[in-house]
Every structure is written in C-alpha cells, then in structure tokens.
Amino acid sequence: MSRVKVFFNSSVNSKIVASLAGLGLVGFVIFHMLGNLQVFEGSDAINGYASILRDMPILLWTARVGLLAVAGVHVGLTLRLALRNRQARSVAYAARRYRFASVASRTMALTGSLLLMFIIFHLLHLTAGVIDPPALDGLDAQGRIDVYGKIVHAFSNPLYVGIYVAGQLVLGLHLSHAVSSVFQTWGIEHAALDHLFKLAGPGVALFVVLGNLAIIFAVFLGLLRT
Amino acid sequence: MKFTLRIWRQGGPNERGGFVTYLADEVSPDMSFLEMLDALNQRLIAAGEEPVAFEHDCREGICGSCSLVIDGVPHGPDRGVTTCQLYMRRFADEKTITIEPWRAKAFPIIKDLVVDRRALDRIMQAGGYISVNTGGAVDGNTLLIGKDEAETAMDAASCIGCGACVAACKNASAMLFVAAKVSHLAMLPQGKPERTRRVMAMVQAMEREGFGSCGNQYECEAVCPKHVSVRFIAMLNREYLRSGILGTKIPARSDPPHGESY
Ligand code: HEM
Ligand code: SF4
Ligand code: FES
Image 1 (cartoon, rainbow over the protein chains, first blue to last red):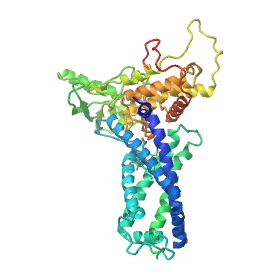
Image 2: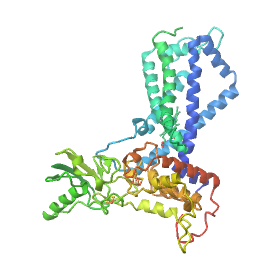
Image 3: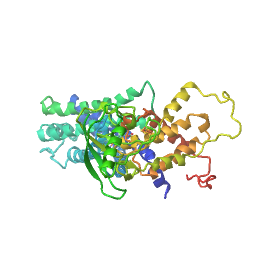
Image 4: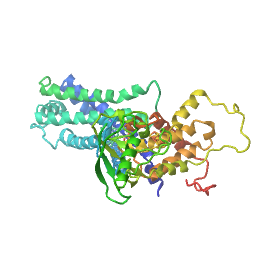
C-alpha cells in the first residue's frame, strides 16, 4: 500500500485532514457572509466590492481553485468516512433511542450532501447566472456587473427565498456540530473551557445564518430595492 | 410485575434471526434484569424449549460480560450501570421491553444475544507490553505519581471492556474503549516507554477490526457503565498526533520480539 493510502486508512488521520479542510470552508463562509452584507450600503458599495475582486483575476482564480480543492478534500474524506461507518453498523437496531447525540451530529452526512447540492445550485444561480438571470444586461450605470441587481432580482421571488432559507437551515445544522467538533478532533479539551467549545458551533452557525438571512429577507420584505 | 419481552433469537452466526415475544410474569421488582431472564430460561427449559443465550459472569458490574441493548439503549435506561445491576423496579409494570444484542460488524453474533467481542482483545494485544522490571518489588514511593494524574489514569482504567460504547455509537466506533486504554497507560510512568508506538498500534488494530470512526456525538459516554469521559477521546487524538509527529524510534519492520503483532 502506498504511504498516502496507509495514512488515510486511519480514521483519525482522515478526520484531522477533513476538519482542517472544513475549517477552511468555515472561514470562507464567514467572509462570504460579511462581504455580502455590503448590500446594505447600497448598490455602489457591493458592485464596487465585486469589481475589486474581479479586477484581481489571478487572486480570484487562485482563491476559487483553492476553495474547490479544499471542498473536494472535505467532501471526499467525509463521505468515505460516512460510507465506512455505515458498513460498521450493517444491521440496524429495531428499537433505537439516543440519549445524548444531537440531531445535528447524527445527520452530518445528510446535511453535508444537501449542502453540496445547495452550493452547486447557488454557483449556477448567482455566480454563473445560468439559472434565472435578470432580464437586463446585468451591468450597472458604471458598466460593472450589477451584483446588487442580481440579489434583488433573486430574492424578490418567493421560490428562491424558499430555497435559500432551506439552504441556510441546512448550513446552520452542519456548522453547529462541525465547529464544536473540530476541537475534539484536534484533541483540544479543557475542564473549564469545554463548554465554550460546545457553544462555538451553534454560535458560529447562528452568526453566519442570521447574516445571510438578513440579506434575503431585507430584499423579500422590500427594504432593499432597485 | 409482568412484562412482555421482545427478544432477538438467532440459532447461530450464519442463521437468520428474528424477534420472539415472551411473557414474563411473577417478576419481583427486586430481581435484576438478568435474574428476570434466568427465570424465563427456567420456564423455557422446563417446557423443553431452547433457553435464551446471553452473556454474564460477575453480576456485580466489574467484568464487562453482560451486554444487552434494552429498549434501544445499551445496558438499559439507568446511567452508569451494567445490565446485571439494572433492577426490574426501574421498569413500569406490564411494559413491553425490546432486548437486542450489541450490533456492530466487528461484533458478530454467536447466538441469540451473545456477540463475539474478541475484537477488543485483539486491540489490547496490539497495544503490547509495558516495561516493568521483574525481581523484587520496588519500594512504594520510589516512583512518584501526582494525585491528579493517578486519579485521571484510574478513571480511564475503570473501563471494563464491555463494548457498550460501540453498541451505542451510530458509527459502531470503538474510540471510547481505545481512548480509555491508551490514555490510562500514556499518563503513567510505567506506560511511557512504549507510549508512542502503543497508540499507533492500537488505532491501527481498531481500523483493521472494522469499527467506524468517531463523529464526536458522545453517545458512548452516555451509556458507559463506568462513566468513561469523552475527554479521553480528545486525549487519544492528541496522543495520536504526537506519535505522528515524533514517529517511532523502533523500526517498524523488526521481528516482533515476543510474537506480538503490530
Ligand atoms: C460550507 C460548507 C462546509 C463547511 C463549512 C463544513 C465544515 C465542516 C467541519 C468543520 C466539520 C467538522 C470535522 C470534525 O468532525 O472535526 C465537518 C464535518 C463533516 N462534513 Fe462538512 N462542511 C461543509 C460542507 C460539507 C459537504 C458539502 C459535505 C458532504 C457532501 C460535508 C460532509 C461532512 C461530514 C459527513 C462531516 C462529519 C465527518 C465526521 O465527523 O466523521 N460537509 N464539516
Ligand atoms: S469505555 Fe465504557 S462502554 Fe466502552 S468498553 Fe469501556 S466500560 Fe464499556
Ligand atoms: S455480569 Fe459482570 S459486569 Fe455484568
């Protein structure tokens, strides 16, 4: 067996690498949300922010490729672990009661897979503009890509509001277990601080989800308009 | 008291199993769960039927033999007790109780409620020896161990190897068991010389046996009859990281000196 195979045959190693990649994704999700909050400063701010990103194609594409690789590592490793876990309990219990394990912790593979579908949809929708592009040419007065217009167009439609709200709920569930879990995976535990580590997951999840929901509902309720 | 029991019956490792319903009446509230099953078996034997096979030995919560999933919870509804220490007064009269074996690919069923838990022994074997000199016993206080360390090591050492952690885990992971064994020796001076190699060997053996991975769900701690804490799993992860970084000074492919397999 190759060294790489031997390394990843250890579930402990796999989990450490998967959680490193996961933490990379957590960082992205937070900055993505904070960046997008600029819609509240008006179309000029967010379109300017988007065009700054696009003016640095090398940086943008490095980030995109890097992010794709990190996501690939995370999905690949976690799904492999999840598959092996299913094999480890090949016969299910007839009666099953959980005493402690949270719903979020038991549904990581499900929420992860739904998240993957949501991310692909989101990229096709708002990044690539394949799904439901706005009717106009998509440029603002200064000839920049009209991100503000895209957001307002998307979330004026109850269908997309529904999909994105569902996506946020799934993201919230995944994050609420994931972020707390990372401490344990890395062997970080402490008699007094453990309860803070437990709160970190739901805290980060709430922060990200509320930020994103604010944008969605601000448009839907007519607070942000073109 | 009177109970309806739904018990998993399976003739042998490769036979099809299924639930069979029995009526247990004239149960005293002071009977232990196993005594209630003993009484049922006496009746089955008297009627010329095959008694229900289940494991037990000490019946005082120290050997780790007893192993039943009772209404979906390993060792039943009370926390911090083994099945042999669970009493029928804990159940509502006339209740239906479902009794299943530990379920994990690494614990194949031998018969009825008895599973083969030798996978745990093989993990222990992979852990190998600790260096203790033979000869006269050393003076009590030559080897000083801090009170806290001794207590924590003892908390880990209290694992009785019952496998309830595996049975409770959605992933059938043995991490709590391995964590208890690794931490208990890694913390004490007697276990330090082989510390780096031991954790690697035990985790490797764990993967070989086909247990799942830890999802940090902590269902194991909730059912552990000895309250072994999941903080030991963090300690195991730490030990493992440490070994990965330091590596082992012992050549990986030397001949096993005493026939240990690692
Ligand atoms: C925004 C995207 C995502 C973020 C921020 C994220 C983050 C994380 C983090 C930090 C963990 C914790 C690792 C640990 O236990 O220490 C985790 C676990 C997990 N993730 Fe993700 N993840 C994302 C997307 C996905 C996707 C798309 C999938 C699958 C298709 C997925 C599947 C899983 C699974 C199954 C686990 C549990 C692994 C285990 O405990 O064995 N995740 N995630
Ligand atoms: S850790 Fe607890 S549940 Fe697991 S084998 Fe040891 S005593 Fe049993
Ligand atoms: S029979 Fe020994 S612990 Fe239950």
